[in-house]
Image 1 (cartoon, helix red, strand yellow):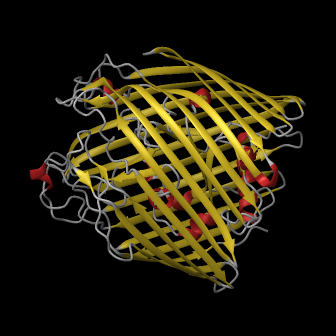
Image 2 (cartoon, rainbow, N blue to C red):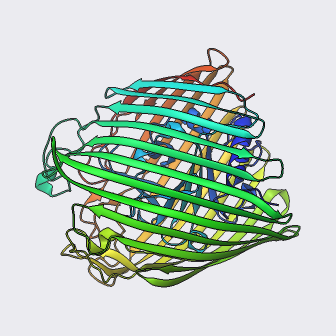
Image 3 (tube, rainbow, N blue to C red):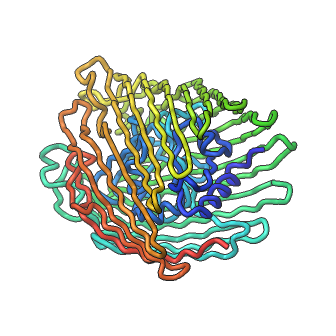
Length: 616
């Protein structure tokens, strides 16, 4: 019988903690829950999946989620001027609102613009990340066109005892970051408490001339744009002898961002996620899970010290999932999801509330060398009516760890409140949901000290929402996205190498003046190589990332040049539980832009002191 979502996450994280490195092909294959909403071995996923563990985070020494995820297959970012600034994630060339982001089983993201503020999620509070590429609306509902990213925050273990943790980072641009935590458990219980803060005086977000170029900065303010963040996290749970499990989690992130603008140049933000889950077995072959959650975010905007406006959004969520084992190797999942969205702002919205109810079914089976996964879902949205989505995937396991897979899925995206009504009621309330259909072929192999994977896909999106020449949102476009992703992992004489390569062709097919143009802010070629090795107490590593040319606008009038960056890192365990880390980012001080006229950090150095006792 499959384990509950939280139990599976705890098991996966415990397995990862016991392994030296997730990139080591010889390590145990991790358990993932995001691909199917049930616990499966990652080798049995019939979709392209990446797993990042706490060990990876400490090895790579990132300052943000963008640092950590950039260059993974199908993943790219557009950042507006440095750490803490607005950051958009593009999965497999789809829009930034086409990827669902979850934290501990709770969906996050503004109901105003449909974006998850990933720049406000503290990386030091993260235990594990699962990235699933491809359509997932048949399991998760609206907006999962490009994929799903689930973040699991740090947690305790029933058998882990008391484990304090501590880290302090300092570096370029007056950066100072600190984190402290306390986790543990006894018998059947576990808990975690964490607190953190970060400050950097930042860089000048917009380069001089942006206002004249109408590049979105709207003002030339040749100053440094600082960023501050304070965060708190808590989680805990209890598991009874009969398998019944009750758990809860809470994360709150408070930010202050300075930027360049004529009408506002500073925002104070609140991002909060809370959830609770109860899982039990009514019968031996039947597991049921009840969960509730809430995500809220608020932006208070200022011009210097003068308050100029706010926007607040809240999403309440509830789910009932039933996993029924029919026979060995066959599992049926039946579930109901509900979510209610509310927005409040100094800007007038013609509607401020809506809700969605979805029912889904999934069948997973293994017949000898064959795997089969079928899923279907029906959503009823109070604004847009009924929408049906589905997916089918088949996989075949050859000898020597070789696996072939083929899949097809449909998905849809509901227009956001901003699309419909912003600003001041002048959006387009007649917008229709975007609809997509995707097909994918995959080939992968795991053998001893090396592994590789190759995936090719095509996604077509109809009723694509875009701005016309008068900056009015309309269903005026179609898109066809083709892509190929490759991965290679090798362990040679103690050196661990992981390489990623993505080729993307995201084309507009609106039949108008932009027909055949590349969708904006999506590089068509990206590559990343991570190389690491330990020499006793010393760890050495490097990451090289390269991105090809992209464009900042739909007409492709403003090209963003290709670039490459190199990061070097070193760590030293000077005692069993203490480690010092150093990272030199953008070694060759490359200048580049992911958003037209917005600067990115140059050469930077960071130093971290970390106390992290091993799990007993």
